[in-house]
Length: 185
Image (cartoon, rainbow, N blue to C red):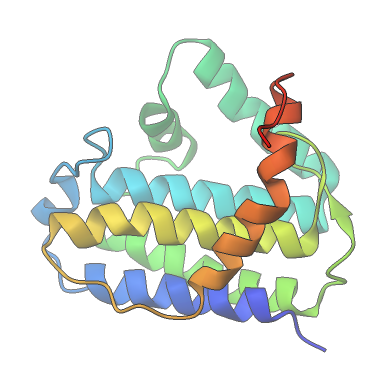
């Protein structure tokens, strides 16, 4: 049995890849409306997050070590885009796009075959494999929207977004508990 959310993640990545593939190198540095992040910033963020999620599935110790590097850079004053530039060795443009694509395909396959209820580590509390790959889908979908907006392309609606909505409903109460706040209603 394969995990459908892993296939939806891969498909969402392919849609974003297809949007960015025709770009020239300079286009990857155009600022979006999301914190002025560029397509390079978005891809680095997605690629690094995918790498962390994959490590959480397959190598918990490596996950902790890799995340510790990001945390140290952030604690040292770097913002997320600066830190991921350093962590990914300056990957940018078409080379970054190819690295991201070369990783998300095999990653989605590993997640599709994993036990959906298995608990994996994350930056916050542990989560299920199903929630982990759905979170990667959510990141790709939401950050990808900034690129669609930047390049004036209307995104085609699909049922893949249902996964994001379900994740939001499932984590609504936890979001307040995590911040020591009372959930409304």
